[in-house]
Length: 524
Image (cartoon, rainbow, N blue to C red; front, side, top):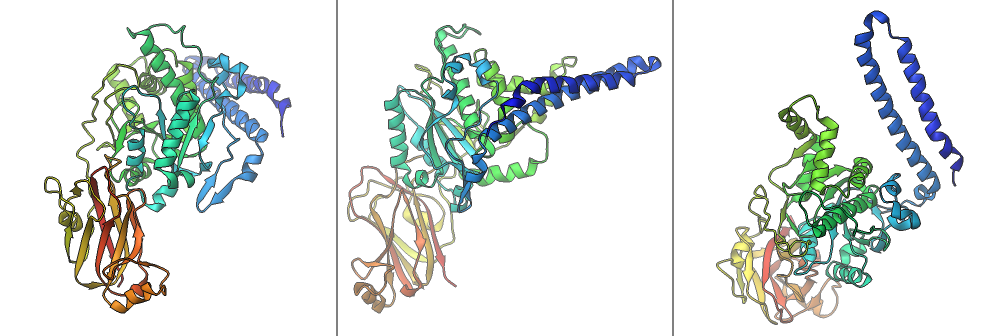
């Protein structure tokens, strides 16, 4: 469904409205109060202009929506997660003005979606641009950090968009395959997406002017970075309520999701442009998704002139600073429009910049010390392990919630054994390995097994009478296994009281292991 007949009349209608408002205003001016009323007239004209701009944008959105009328009828729900059809993509109305080369390829603002289920309607959208790095990639660790201690409910409330800001098909495919391999469940659920730009999206960077003492290579790097952020924001604006800008070389603080949501609710009714959850550059900046179109337009307007953090500061200046007042007043007004939360929720960990040859040891001093374990009250037990601990990070302390367990490289047959002081009726379990700062130190090919106090229960499992489990050795029965470093599940009540629980390694590993969380839920 298209409405082309409205397009040519839109500027005329807006101009006529402005003239009528101006005429009515001047009719009300009296000679004796002309000096005073001139200011009133000016203010009314400014407000009229603002209303006209808002109306223009709304009408453009209406026309766009009419062209994509199938969107509302195709919006479906998967549990509590909405899905956005992949063909629908909001276009910045003036993008072709700032990027004229796109007129030859009008579909170049639409992303190539490599992984994704079209998830939309979430609270938080986390956007991660990534590029080829000469020395080291931090992307998998970054995504792992974001996913590390999310609850199932929190996973339904976010989407993580990885934007591979390259046009080399082989490189884009390698990143996509790496994400799919490391996070298969999160990709299939729609939690993690991977997109890339059209090969025609980027302009010719060879004619850029060198400014602010930057080399030609750095000017190209910062210009492309501005275009990368713009592309991500355009894609993400219909995905959720809030947009959080990240980088591909950060680590998240444990509990970041709950902290961010809580703070947003505290300030949701106040007037601000963005919230800062990190002090470094563009990391951890949270915007309302509804504000993204005007932010993108500003970035595109000056994408060749200045780096992104300067442009963001200029947006604040334009919005609130009075040229007739001093810089102190301007700083105070800008501070009202950007709220800084402490401690920071994201820390920069990359050493090798995406700008070739640049080393950056940037650290956010407000990030604080990372908590590498989570404590829970577990039933009294004796805990032993065949694994040798490192520097006193023992398995006993991990079980008691006093520390994390750090064990040397597991081999086939290694175990952790938890023998309860008295048999317990256990409802559920959670064992989390790895840490929010490291991706690899996990249990692989490891089972969770329990020893029923009543030996007849083990006999029933042996005979195949209890479908919940399968027999192991020494009377133990297998109730679960580690998947991507986590073992979590419920224990069938038919197993009755449990005398012991163990984790058993079934193949040699090539990495150490960190056990950061142990939780056993009792049935009362």
